[in-house]
Length: 229
Image (cartoon, rainbow, N blue to C red; front, side, top):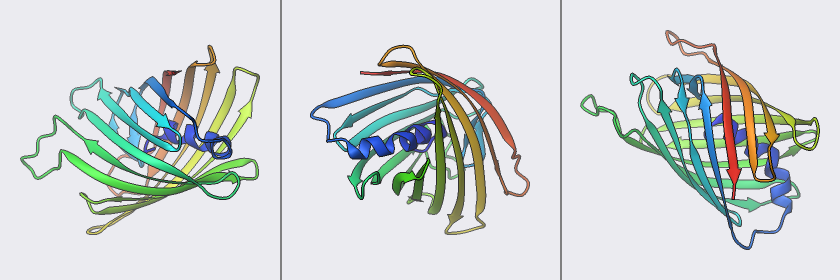
């Protein structure tokens, strides 16, 4: 998915999920994180925000809603809706395809901005030795922008309740009109299992880009609670 913490979880789980049989029923995961800064593809969208989400999974199909509610009213509320499907490839590898709708309910559109944009994506998840890999291509049909992104994850198990998850990403955005840019980031999260269904996760992230005249070099922290039904 579009957010770094969600992508990290998907990468680190991809091998085991692709080897498992399709679930006979659905599962629901709810997430309640706070982030000191909201950065997407190297660009800052808020200084601090609550970012709750709900994801429903049934077999290889998934769908969800993700929200970013800035604590500073000078930034826009964002609500994203997504759905996708995973296709099993070789052992430990899956093909993931889906669609995301990015919605900004309070956005002033008098200047020509779009309240909702739609982006399709396709990616391959799997393992490369000790690393988890996710290679994705995105195309926003509203903004007419193509993005390619690679992410590598690595997990260090500390004990049965705790791990350290590392993630590095690099991507390039190419709009149909105008100049593109490259972004990259690094992150570390530490999930702690309270129960088999409840987890608290703390993390730190860094991201930057090569856009001229736009602030980069972002560093921020996250803290969240996840519950799986």
